[in-house]
Amino acid sequence: MKQYRFQCYAAGLYFNSVVNAADDKTAIEGFVQNINNKQYSVEPDGFGRGKRRYHLTYEELDNGTTGVNIEEARVGVQMGTASVVTG
Image (cartoon, rainbow, N blue to C red; front, side, top):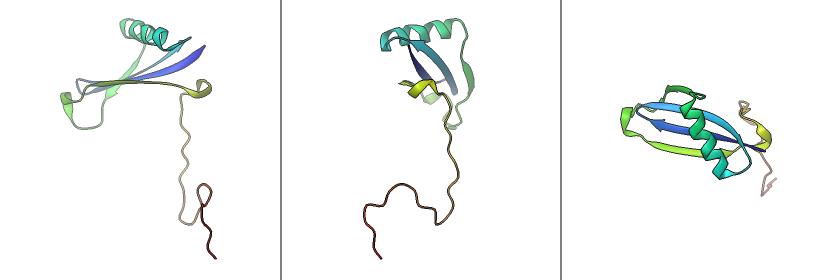
């Protein structure tokens, strides 16, 4: 079983829903069921575009996680691996 996150921007709103499914097709059917059963979160889209923005995306979540942990980087902190080192 996989977990999918659906994000929809419509009518100036942002809809978010997570579905458990075996494959993409079943996930889409599950998303439709979530919409019909009002199993989603909704908030203003935050883009200030009002009702002109319409799109739907979905993604398979890695290991069933739905959160993102982003820590603040400070000046001078190395991120990643350097491809060229001078010195």
